[in-house]
Length: 274
Length: 345
Image (cartoon, rainbow over all chains, first blue to last red; front, top):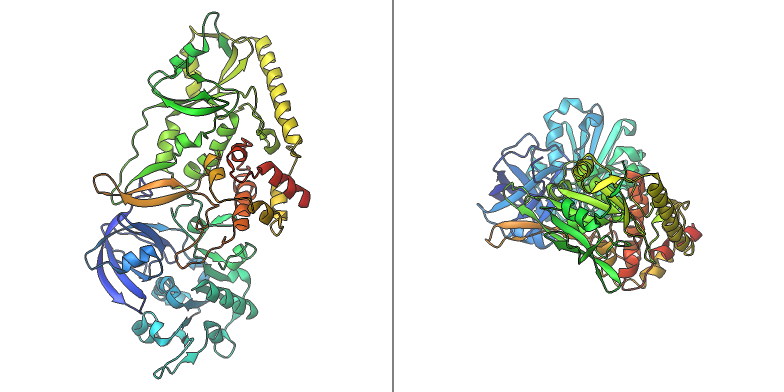
C-alpha cells in the first residue's frame, strides 16, 4: 500500500460499452497496474466530486486495463456515466478480501447473479475458466428484469457458453424474441433447472439485496450449508480500509473483512439484506 | 522514579521547559468549565492543569474535525508536525487513544495523518482532582488517573505540591534533562498522592453508583441482550440526530472521506468527522439503508461501543468522560441508557 491510502492512482477512460439503459461498462487504463484478485474491489473517484466502491468486472489476469460495469443509481455514478473517452479518474485499491479460490478447487462452483450483480461475478468467472481443470464444474445462473436488461449479453450467449459451463438465464418478464426461462432467478435454482452435488459444491451470489436474500433461502433449502454460500455485501464502503466506520456488519467491516462473506458469518447480524 | 519540584521551583517553570519550542494544547478555564486551547507556548496566567477534562476531546488534536487527506491523484505526505505537547490530559482522553491507535495505526494500512501528529505529540497527563458530576470512568473499568499511555504524568496535591512521573522513554529523557527543577519525590509525597487518588476514585465511583453503574457490570451482555428491546425507541424519541454525542466523544472515530478541490484547483480530499446518528450514515447509493430508523442508529452507537470494540479489542469504546451527557440536545444520559439495558437484560 502507498504512503497515503486515501490517494488514488490516476486512470484514463479508454472505452465505453453500453450494456443496458442504465448500466455501462467502462474500461480504464490506470497509470500503474492495479493487480487485483476476483472479489476484491476498488474505489473509483471523479476528481473533485466524489468516490464510490465498485468491483472490477474484467479478468484479474489483465492488469494494464480494468473494466468496471456501473449502474447509474446515485450522484457519483451519474457523474461517471457522463464521462467521455479520455476523461481522467482516480482508482484506489485493490481493497478487501478476494474469493478463496483455493477452497473452491476440486468442487462445483455455482455462480448466481442478478442484474448488475453479474459484474463482479464476471471477474470471478474469468478467474475460474483460466484454470478450468481445477474445478469439478462451473454453473452460472443469471437473472435480469427483461432481455434488454441482460448485461454482457453477447458474451453471455456466446463465449461464456462453453460446453463445460452449465449456463442458464432467466428474465422476470420476456419479450417476443425471448425463448429462455421466465421468472425470478430462484426459478432457475429449482431441482429441475439445476442439478447439483451439494456436498461438493459452493455457491457464489451477487445481486440486488432482495435477490440475494431469496437466492440464499433457496440455496439453503437445496441443502447448501451456510458456510458454502458466498455473498457480496453491498455496504457504504467509504474509506475502504476499515477506518471510517460506515460499512460495519456486526464485528466486521465489509470493506476490510469482506465484501464477500459466507452466509454463516453474517446470518445473525441485523438487517443484512438492507 | 517519581519526582517533585525543588523548593522555589514552580509548575509553570516545568511546563515552560517541557513545552519549549512546541505547539501547546492546554486547558483554559472559562466560566464553569475547561476548553482545550491551542497556543505557541505555555501561558502560566492562562493555562492550567485542570481539575477534570475539557469540553473538547483530545482526539481533536490527532484526528481534527476536518483535516486534509492530501491530493487525490498524487501521493503526498501529511504536513509535518514539528512537535506538539498536550498538557493536562486526563485519563479518559488518554485511554481513548487506545481505540484511535487501534483504528488508525494497528491495522494496515496505517493512517499517515493521524500517525504524523500522534508520534510528534508529547502527552503530559494529569490526575483528576475534582471530577465533574457527569464523570463515570470508574464504571467502565477506568480510573480518574493515568496508569499508562503518557509521557509524563503530574499528580497535583494541596499546597502547590506535585508528584511527577515519566511513562515513556521520551518522558524519562525529558525529566532527566530538567534536574535543576526536580528532585526525588520521597515516599511521603507518593503516599499522599495515592491517598488523594483513592479519594477521587471513590467520588467518581459513588456518583456512578448513584446512577446504578459500577465496574462489575457487563455492558456487552446488556447491549446484546436488549437488541430487540423497545428501550432504544424510547430513548431515540429524544434524539434530534445532531451528532453532538459523536463529536464530543473521546473515542468516536467515524469520518467521511469528502472530495473537493484545493485553493489552487487541484482535486483534494478531506477527512471529516461523521455521526452514526445521521440518517444516511450507512445508506448506499441504491437507497438501501440497514439503519433507517433512529432507534436502530442509537442502538448501533451502543453496540459499537460496548459490543464491537469489546469483541475486537477487549475494550469498551467509552471511557466515562460524560461529555455526551453534557452535549446531548435531547438530554439523553448514557448512564440512564446503560442502566436500563442492564435492568432489562
